[in-house]
Image (cartoon, rainbow, N blue to C red):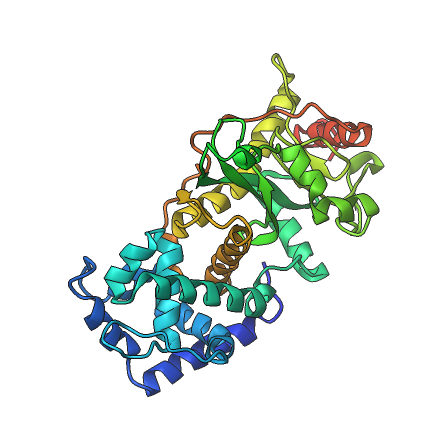
Length: 383
């Protein structure tokens, strides 16, 4: 895939930030001394990466992104010894909180600050990232989309495919005694918030929607999303059609699992038993392609463990913003080609305790598109 718009500029900014950090002395030397003995750290040179799960270059780039916003607020946030927290210190605290999922108390003890400081710093970071990092999560430009469609066709043969959609549950520990929390109870009788994401072939998030309670299913979340409304209006997935053999025209579309409806712009698997060879082959190819979204969600929750575990009574108004920032950080790691991300487990599991839900809604135009593509992929259409 070609570079995301502004990618080279961001790469230069990352290098400039790294150089600036080196010129001003190595912040990490002083900071690591503060946490030595509190955290179990391996030997250099992986020490920094083991704490923050990203490279120094990516860390410096993130600091450069949020520096102005975080410094614009006068603050007396300090370590226990009275030293004022620099921007790097604040970003380090926030990233550790988001990546480890540890409690405010544990983070505070590890880094030598009180838990209220951890809370304030993390939220200031989230606000700054929402403002300064949002350009890392955009729907592809026309040229980018051509590259994405080409790559998806190479994965399992789907022509004119623009992405994969998936949904995951962000677990929450809420009081069952509070009757207002019943809306957050999902089909597995757990409290959760839903995240819907559309990803490209590189597992980059291209559209995310979150904040809906676990009591909703994938269909309800999809219909409530801005993406659905744009697709229905014809203002998204509205690129040029591709012509297959026999003159069949294939519009732009995305792919999802059987929890989603079959629509003219959203293809899902065939359901039922005793499927024909062509339908079985279609399902295999689709499942392999959907795995891209499953892997992206698994990596998101594995790397940013604050949303990967069960959050203790979170602020449900702030949680969607935290989820968004984790998605932005996920994309930044990809955009900057951070090699540390390659160490992450290549698992597809992100909702391990959840059973696959089924949606039986099928639009006639979607049925026709799926049948034609099934025939095409099985080689029944002439070359």
